[in-house]
Length: 156
Image (cartoon, rainbow, N blue to C red; front, side):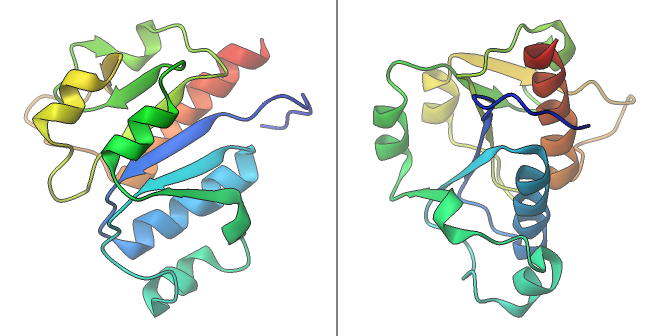
């Protein structure tokens, strides 16, 4: 998928990520698809972690990653934008939603998702439909699926 619209900058936010390999894979996805990555701290690892570095390869551009000290700081910065939480607890499928370029797609921790207060603050809660009796997809896979749909919608 190639796009050359200069204002195309979807935003992916990770809530307190705790698996370095997943975050590194998401860094690569964001880099390749032209998305801004935002990380809500605390992060469960350092960007110097060898597991992170092995997967991120040469795609890490730290100046293109925005860090927030906590969820409160993150939501304050988004007061005029929609934050779309992608969660297994969502009712509506991501394919039934009309994305905007200004939306931030928020994904929870691999080990625990997001707390209830974040569920309450998010403007929308969407899910990726899965086969019956399956718990969840890998975080990096989920980011790629929903980000690709957002880009498809906003570039058409």
